[in-house]
Amino acid sequence: MKAAGLRCQLLRRRGSLFFCGLLALTASSFAAHAAVDGAGEQDGERRLAIRSEALRYEHGEGVPKDPLRAASLYCDAARLGDAEAQFSLGWMYANGRGVDRDDSRAAYFFDLAAKQGHPQSQKMQRFVGEPGSLVPECMRPPVLADDGHDVLVASSEAQKVVFGLVNQLAPEYGVSPRLALAVIRAESNFNSQALSNKNAQGLMQLIPDTSARFNVKNPFNPEQNLRGGLAYLRWLLAYFEGDVSLVAAAYNAGEGAVNRYRGVPPYAETRGYVKRIISLFKRDDHPYDARVTTPSPELSRIRLANGS
Image 1 (cartoon, one colour):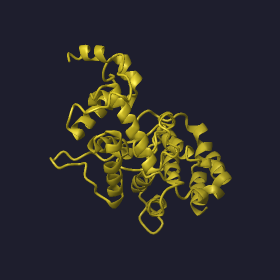
Image 2 (cartoon, helix red, strand yellow):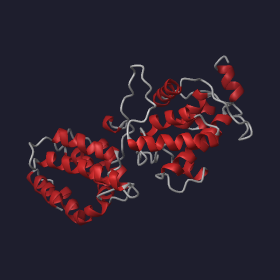
Image 3 (cartoon, one colour):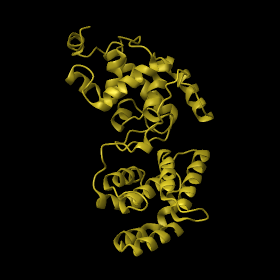
Image 4 (cartoon, one colour):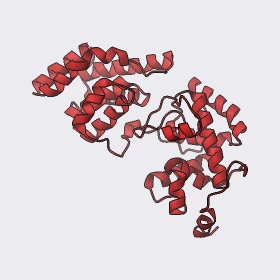
């Protein structure tokens, strides 16, 4: 409530009474969205701490006012799934408060929060248009090290839990744990609460159709998400007969796109994704269970087109 009032004061100084009215309309609902549903208590406390620090820097409360620092902190919390931080960052971009005004970027963050049921963000969506297609840099997984060390090593207690689940579950699906970990690293950077602007969810970034296809009821539950992602990888491995490049391309862009283009689709994102998976997995092929599904009807033509 205090933050909303302060924002309104700032907006009045700039003559933005319309936005201020929207803030006042739903300020009382902020507390209900202090943490993302289903997040663990420890993760929730971490997001709240980051968001609170961002708020102080945004308004200069006890620290020098630093909107760029505030935006960076909000994005840290937004990447962890904090709806309030996503809204706050969208608000900064919508009003050019300490950052360049950017309706497309504002829409990206409002969209993330709105999908979590954040009412203020849902109201703001109509004023900023559709989200852009590019994921903001601060929301992307950290750039992987390229100094020779194995990046598929747990670096926190939370990651150790994920690694343990992967090592336990992947063999059940006939999937190499290393391939599964490569996909998780590329998709969510081991954030079980990750949510993309395309509504891809959880560790393996399952879209709702994929979750339904593999009977995932709660994609933010790490075990359910992993089982769904592993089942999909098992199916893709059989469908493309162990060709890791085709499997990675299909995981990113869909098997239909791979069939249509008879190989890795000419999308920059997908081609970069395939290179990343191959560099992490360090193999071009993977064993597969031919009983899972019949191969792609385009596979012979794909191999012919690629000279294999």
